[in-house]
Length: 248
Image 1 (tube, rainbow, N blue to C red):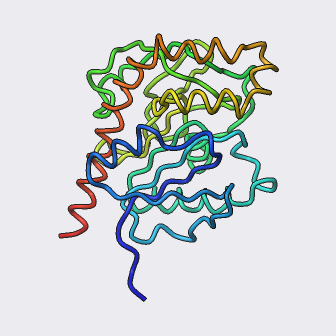
Image 2: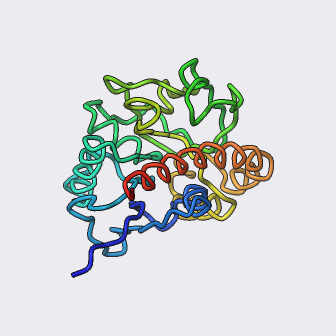
């Protein structure tokens, strides 16, 4: 049986949260991707195989919901394998929580959900990080999470918000580190629309109006996408470098 060609493995947990600008950045670097959707019946691979990168997207489940969502166990094993082998890892929202869990941090419910457009600030380490270098020290991002975590041991805290102390972190050296982003830089207008529809109950529970959240995209999304394209483009560049090196 022929071996599977090298690609970037993307784990997508719900239809409303696709990779968005992350996929765009990888395509721009000529990196093929393979998206696994457990919610649609896809089986999570038992190993990374020849994958040149691992992307773990968001979702409404919690990192500890292993009995309710059994595929998460396999995802945690893939993250652990990637961290051990140096395969570039990028986790968004739930994905960042799963990375934090693998690294030994407790992932627990936050006092309240952080939803909508809100400020994010880079730490000194974040401002110097190769992915975020040159990004404004304070910017507006899209948020949609109910769980949070303390900075995992051995990690650099890259960003924070008024509500959440650890919004982004890096594990390992910058040139081959794993990144966890609790906020969403990957969103497009369509993704914002889809999330407000799919998670309307969470908006209602927090007395938030879907139309207001969608209207916020007109004001904030252009700048957010500019940052997202820069950050994810740099991460995709690292994936491309590793893939090129592996092919030699």
